[in-house]
Length: 88
Image (cartoon, rainbow, N blue to C red; front, side):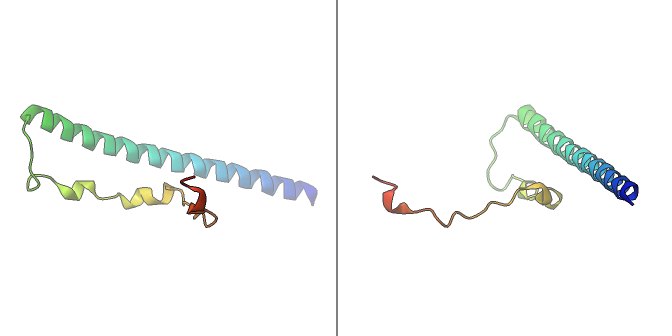
């Protein structure tokens, strides 16, 4: 029974480790794609060398990629913060 339990634990840890590596690879691919997009924009701006107004900007490209939201850590609220002594 102990051997089966140990085998299951080792197998589970190996599966979890492989899953983390896949997540890391997906995150790196997503970052590389975004960098390529931004580099293409910068090359375009460097070639044209013009100043843009608000009508010329592509604001759709500035939206948050929803695939990357799962990797953003959650920020916990600090309810114990007290402003009474902030300016002493």
